[in-house]
Image (cartoon, rainbow, N blue to C red; front, top):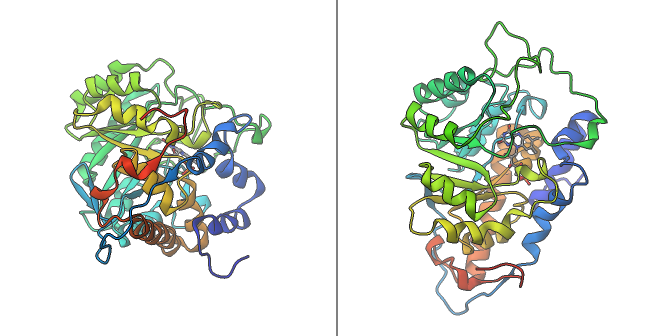
Length: 356
Ligand SMILES: Cc1cc2nc3c(=O)[nH]c(=O)nc-3n(C[C@H](O)[C@H](O)[C@H](O)COP(=O)(O)O)c2cc1C
């Protein structure tokens, strides 16, 4: 193993080495043939940068905000389930790493640590958002919302691409044995996980989003939107943000890489005030620059945060995010940008199939 990881991908091997083959595949894999999983990072390479020269880039400011909360740089952590397999402190370590570099974290509803523990482990101004899966038993979702409100979470992120779990071939039909695993946002303390009891709602519709709006005054982001049509619906239904995501290639295989649909979605919501974010395959500072040039306000990383967690807990998460921050700052300097406001669409040459 490399002694000092120098880029984000260098951290992946540490997760592989620290979990069983089964859990490694759980974290790594995508749906079916993994076309979308492979395409997410590759697609970034099809976009070329158009740097500007002879601009003073001696002072660079990578900071931005999401939903009014400051970030030191435009990269946050996307929700991924079950951090306790990657590190004993689980999501508490992730949150500490995130907060130490001024980033944001979307906590999965399927976390192993309670959202109260996570909130208590970081300063109160840390942008923590809670991801929600719409379950058949809506009362469990409502209970999680109430707890997030009480714990000072800044927003909710509703995952909309998951009426059912995508088909992943790695488990060969075998299901992970989740007996004894804690999912404290989904299960009450006296309950054991049971797939019959905890089921995703395959009958949820936009009416559930309207209901959510009535239930809480927290702003909400819809995660998993991939078309202009759904982006327009999201605006109509009161979303404060859209996270363009294909679930890291884990749901419907064959959907486009997220960077390839970003411009379509940004254009569809232009003027609405809704913020657009992206996740999927972000591994380099130049990926961040490209997404911002196409109109994203911020990007999020899923697997790389788990790699960092396995490398060295909070410190590893901090390192992964720190590398992205440094690489972004360098990419800004080399392309003539002093602030994120300078990162505009004229900085990017898009492939012919992508409409701006
Ligand atoms: C192991 C794993 C677990 C995930 N769990 C969740 C989850 O609980 N809720 C959710 O909305 N998305 C979940 N996702 C999707 C991520 O939020 C995110 O969309 C994806 O990982 C981004 O792609 P990247 O891993 O290439 O950065 C998960 C992804 C992985 C890899």
